[in-house]
Every structure is written in structure tokens, then in C-alpha cells.
Image 1 (tube, each protein chain N blue to C red):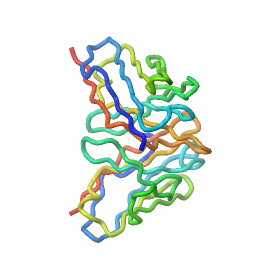
Image 2: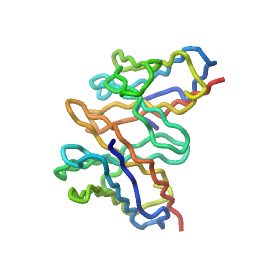
Image 3: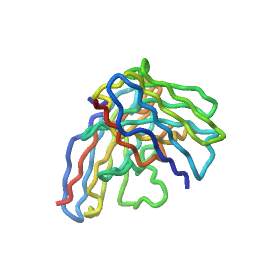
Image 4: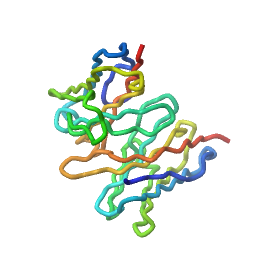
Length: 110
Length: 119
């Protein structure tokens, strides 16, 4: 069972806006930044969002992140077929002194 | 561009020790922390622990009694040893750079190596 809670699946049609939620606690999301990773089958996770809402260079601005209290969200606008992947949220946990992850959300583009 | 590559045996017998190496290229191993993360087939990610460039370690309490991490700075490598493995340790093992500058996050990952525990 993962420390952070994400819905197991999400879906949308091309062009739509989709959001993925991530819920944690005061020891992780509530007191630290949130990060999002994108993972395609058979490949390593790729950093998509860092420090709640910052995008590494090369990540399209269709991807955005937000955080409020002990919850966070990843939004994908203008959905494309190539966005079909697994998405994981992560945050540093003060109790663990290490990162904790969500269980992952499988995004399907219909 | 920093690159990481995991290597080691892909099949380990139950009760034996899993040993993996992560080789870092395109950047210095100094001034960063280095983590191991694993992902059982079809499941989510689990942080195993990290080692700093100076050799300080921190392990996930759930695995602490069985884990040892070390590094060889001049070879740009760091290592994972997991003792007394069982089938539950079957997973894709990733090494990653932990970027700690005010906050800590995993920015570069290796491609991962599937390690199966089976007799």
C-alpha cells in the first residue's frame, strides 16, 4: 500500500483536460514539495513536474501541477495519444527522511 | 546529460544476497545523493534508501535490516546489497540521482533492471 493516494486510472479524449489527484499527510505533501513522474511501459520514470508546479526543460506547458494543503494535482490539457502512460506523484516524507510515492495512475486516451 | 546504468545478476536464489551496481556517467558523483528504488511487477514505486557522496546512508525502515549501500567515487559507481531475499523482492530495481538543494528529489533515473528471486 502506497503512502500517497492516487486514483488507479483516469481517461480522456484527445484535446480534453484531465486531472490526477494525489493525497498525502502533514509529514509529506503538507510540509514538502510535490513531484510528478511519467512512466511508459518498460521504461524508467521521467521527472515531469518538480517543486509543485515547475516543469523541467523539454516538458510541454500542457502539463501543470498544483498543491493545496496535503493534496496535489497534475493537470494535462490538450490531451494527446502520446500522453497515455502511468503517472506517479512523490514527496519527501519527514518521518521517513526519504521520498514516498503514490500508487500510480494509468492514463488512457480514448 | 547525466546517465545512470544498473548492472548485476538478474536471477537470485531465495535466501541469497542481491547485489547491484549503478554506474554514473556525464556528471560527477560528488555533491549529490544517490538512491535505489524498486518496482514489483505491476505495482508502484518503493524507495529503498540513499547514500551521499560522503558515504552517509539512510534506508527505508521496512528494508533497513537487510540493506547495505556503498559507493566508489573514483569509479563513479554506487552499490546495493539486499540480503536474505525472497520472492517478494522480485522487482525492477532503479538507481537514481537525488538532487538535494533545499529540497530533495529524484531527477535522473537509470533504465532499471529486473531481478527475479527464484530457485
